[in-house]
Image 1 (cartoon, rainbow, N blue to C red):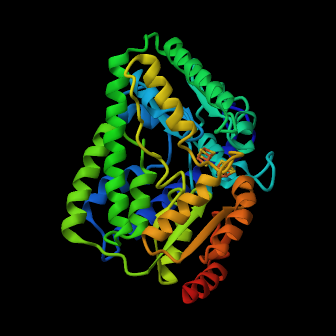
Image 2: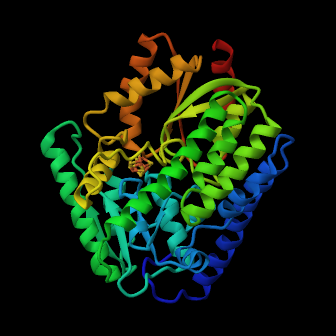
Length: 413
Ligand code: SF4
Ligand code: SF4
């Protein structure tokens, strides 16, 4: 597939049509599999409908009725976009079939999430309208190099330079400067000035979403909803405006509390690389092996909203500082140099919820998680927890092999 935005020739068009049909089928099959479960909760329909549409910025702009801005990971504050009336779309695609479109011209062992993002953009031919911006926090190398791989798509890139040391004052100050720079970019692109009251309202809107998600996480911890349903909800975050999403989550919470679609498997903690719809291979296999994910720290799941924004000073500067701290110091991305908090947080969650084992998911090509899995495994084992490292990608060929390993792991819990 040529990596330009020139119209495809006949063979190229045929490939696009073929892949489009496969992509739709892959999304639909996953949504159907979840809907057919006997423990399905009808209030999940809204979230599954959002996920079943292959990620398209154009369609999202039309559905939400606001300008959308692409961002490559969770680190750019959602509240800031929102305060300017812009909808941020986090690129985190789990589609396997679309990877065919980027099979050549890119590194072979490439982060599967970035490969699918790239494929999805090629599929939709999204060249980016006049002035379109891609927001790129400089977290891992694949994220940093994504604009280069998506060459000639006409988008302007705004890098948010991420200090990889969070504890140093210098790093925190630098990130605050990046947040100020980002606010300036949004002012320039939207022609609006940042208003303190708007920002405050946006912070409140996301706090409501975070509280509701936290409630759902609590239900999952108490095994009152299966882990995979939590993942469905979290994966759909920002596929609609935050207000209706939170409202629907409220309805789900009510329904879930009355129906109690309880999880039956032994509870485990899932850590490591993100899991994005429609690639639910691992969560399905975990269930098949008699376990259930009752807590995780994936940034496509429990960490999409990593906590409250805390501010004592409600001035514009105070709010920007609070956002800066929440997205920098509050984040446990494996790309940080000082990340002991991540393993401590897993240990605390396991202790508090009687979880005996941790499955660590490494996507082939995800170097930060690959590296971290070694030290993480050692520490968890020293504390008496069982640890299983699973390295995989979006393809299904290794399913039987993974299932055998997961079953053996389940037996020793
Ligand atoms: S793990 Fe790190 S790189 Fe990945 S989305 Fe989260 S913050 Fe971004
Ligand atoms: S942190 Fe891992 S999964 Fe996320 S973009 Fe980087 S390589 Fe991919």
